[in-house]
Each structure stands twice: as C-alpha cells, then as structure tokens.
Image (tube, rainbow, N blue to C red; front, top):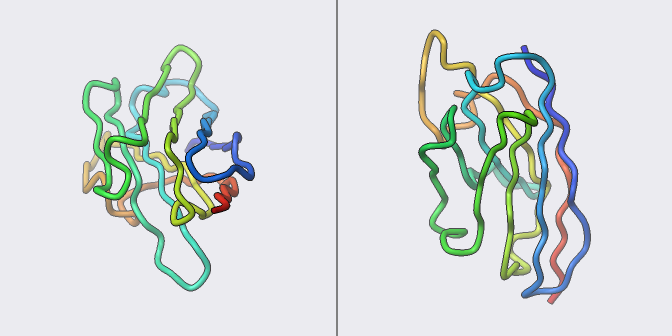
Length: 127
C-alpha cells in the first residue's frame, strides 16, 4: 500500500553519526505506524525504533536508547533515524517499515506486524 525508500547509509568510524531517511509514497502518511529494523547476515531481523502515526510516541531497542532518535515529518512523508555515537555492532542493513493500523495494531517491535518494507540501506561502522 505504500512504497518506502531508505537513504543515508554509509561507512563511518565508531563514535560518528549518520541520519537515515525513509521516504514514503502516497497520501495519508499519518495513518502508518513507522519503524526501523536492522539485519546482519545469519541473524534475525532486529527491531531498532518505532514511531506512532502522529509522532507522539516513540519506542527504542535497549541497545540504541540514548544514541538513536526516530522522528517523522508527516508534511514530507518522511521518517528519520538519527544515529549518534555509532558502534561497530550497529553495522547492519537498516530497513524502514510501515504498518497501516486501520484494521489492526500489533506490536511496534515485531517485524511480521508491519505491512510494507523498503529495500534497506547499508550502515557500516568501523572500529
């Protein structure tokens, strides 16, 4: 129902920052719960952060609390993930996901509860 395109990934050194963006197509962007997930080869997709439809509530994995900030600008149909104090263990492909909550809500942190996914953007943090 919605197309998502991530950008902003790259190669940085530990301690540096990156800001990821997720641009969504279509109208009524504010009906979608948005989340960021990450995945490394051989491991299950991991929840990173999520934000409610109007941006009034945010949720974070313990591993990124205090370092990452999720935000959204519904006038631009865009969700952001500001990543500060990056660590080598943050290295992963980061994907944006959307959940249309019109008929169901599910969990903010459970990947199967999301409807649409972007292709992902690579974040590599060197030590």
